[in-house]
Amino acid sequence: MEPKDTTTNEAFKGFTNANCPFLPCHPGVKRAFNCLFCYCPLIGYECPGPYQTYTDRNGLTRKDCSACTLPHDGYEPSWNFIQKWLEYPQPWSGKPQTDPPTPRPKPGQAEGQGHHG
Picture 1 (cartoon, rainbow, N blue to C red):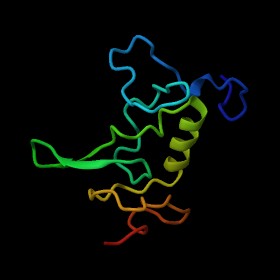
Picture 2: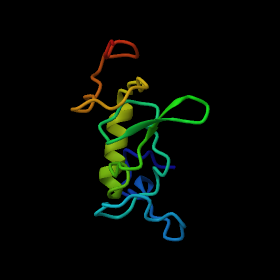
Picture 3: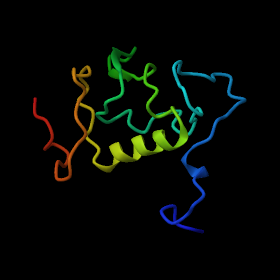
Picture 4: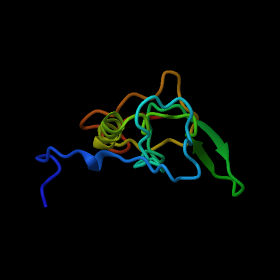
């Protein structure tokens, strides 16, 4: 098996499930719809994608990312976006999104060193 950083075949970066009954789940996607991140791996982390918060039936605060197209808009751009934000993940604070959104974590900002508040 060839390591993904040495292959020229980038098919692992995305796919479109044309038979999905929920497609398209996000309006506004302009490129090939990337279904690889149907459930975004950033759901538990701070990210710049637009999100709202809501309280579920158990009283827990959750992110509603249904307005975000960043992990779905094209195979390569969405792959790069997810990889960039997972490089230095910052756990989600459980608070509504800031304006402007939380900046990308920097190297050395380990969990608990990013923001305080």
